[in-house]
Image 1 (cartoon, rainbow, N blue to C red):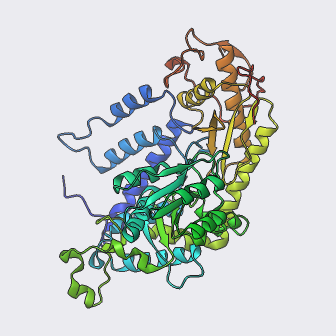
Image 2 (cartoon, rainbow, N blue to C red):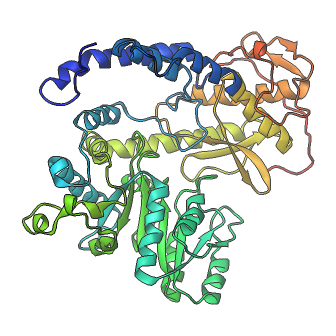
Length: 517
């Protein structure tokens, strides 16, 4: 076998072109095989099918680049949960823009390593300009805001706690019960006291409880507020929290991993009023920014706040090199080797501009509100609340939590929809996190029909053909009783139903007496 060509250099593009064509064909073929938001059958079907298609992963003699790409990419695409499908809406798992994915290809081909200037001359300049520009969006009134690029919200939150610890010693973190789990994990990793969790009974941090906690605690304090919670997408009262922090002499970090991009929307940026009062802000553009993962940031109001991240390694940032004018990049991350994630973000911002990004955001939020309106008009479904950002919680009317969980797993098992789960007001809800700006009203109605039809199937012990409206009995043991795993139906009944059902399903029979919200 000849020596494989490289991706870079003058010959790299010519070597890449036919390989990319093979990859694109395989992506198409895999999506055609999958024919939906995820493969049917659950892990008991998908795992052996994937292993059979890709075995052996390390053969004695290679199969060649086109065969390997075609084989593995097709298998991966056929077995993917595809966030570009309108019924794949469980998590903050965005469908990336094609232009951002194309930019990511260039980053992979050039392969700059962002830990020293001599590995990334132009990329380091682009990253410096991008992080300064994004920090200025968050802190428009400070003279020298800055940001560092992270792998996502989790790393950004960890850095925020680390910087607070370096300023004040072992700070006591206070966060809402609605805060992201990474806050507790970061405190553990950094040897900090366990965070004090303040109640969030309505989905947002309770101000009176926060005031009480700030009054009772006396060590250096860091309050963490959330702009876009994972479960409901709600935004804490940022300005009022900042007032309490100022009164009690506490610092404030705002986890805006989800909601931060609302800054680019003139229609919705008022939801983030008070964001610029934080000592640090987490932003994550592989959520409501449509970037391939990863694309996180931690922003600070003044550049010198990042000084504690400085680290010295003579082979990367020797003092005399720095004095001679070579930029010192090692203090821009806790990682050493890291990708130039700034490129895809910069390409997206330049291609779309403020108005283009605002349009994507506004379209997506409008889609979520339309879904909420459809739920309120459907007597077979209950709505938790109208969305703050793009997360909609719903559940079948009268269903108990067991049925709700089983509906979700059955939709996964059949390959019909990927919905999340969230607990609010003491009950379990189906969670639709809408991030696809191409989703249509017809897509939303089809999703609701899948939910109500599946609920009816489980309660009545039948399965409904969504085109003809005819029903057949499910096999013995396929109803909701004792269903605790992911396999709710036998494999031979996992036929995919159409993406746009037309039949009307009856309202499920109530199984609990509490009044839905």
